[in-house]
Structure formats: C-alpha cells, structure tokens
Image 1 (cartoon, rainbow, N blue to C red):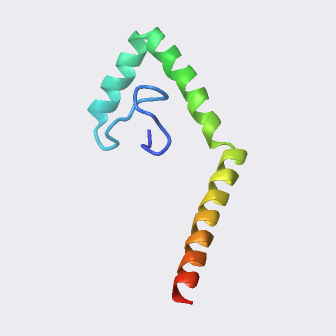
Image 2: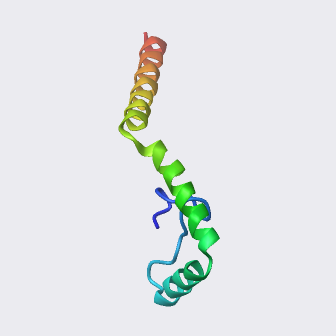
Amino acid sequence: GLRTAVADGISGLLVDGHDPRAWSATISRLLLEPEKRLLLSMGAIEHASHFGWDSTARGTLDVYDQVLSRGLRRSRALA
C-alpha cells in the first residue's frame, strides 16, 4: 500500500512495489494468518474513517486559516 494511505501493520501492510517476491511472501503470510487479516480489516475501517469529506474539508480549512494568519502577521510587521 501507499505510505500516505496505509498505517503499516495496523490498516494494511507496506510492501516494496518493485519486488514480486516481497508481494508473494506478504500475501502468503496473510493467507496463513486469518486473525491478522481480521485485525488489518478492522484497522483499515478505522483508518479510512479519517479520510472522509468532513475531515478533508476541515483539514483544508485549517491550512487556509494558517496561511491567512501568517499573511496577516507579515503585513502587520511590515506596516
């Protein structure tokens, strides 16, 4: 998975994207460990809940607020 979308060992597993042996080993391990699959599934659902529209919009607004407040401080400092 992608580092920005997967919490390694919690919501999924990170695998070297260019190494077929690494993929094979990881998939084989998951096939043999149903408990691990269940834990990763539950972790993925929890992790994904942080990527909804509400949290994305909130994060975007936070960035705008930070940028605007920095600009305001700079303009006051120059005045």
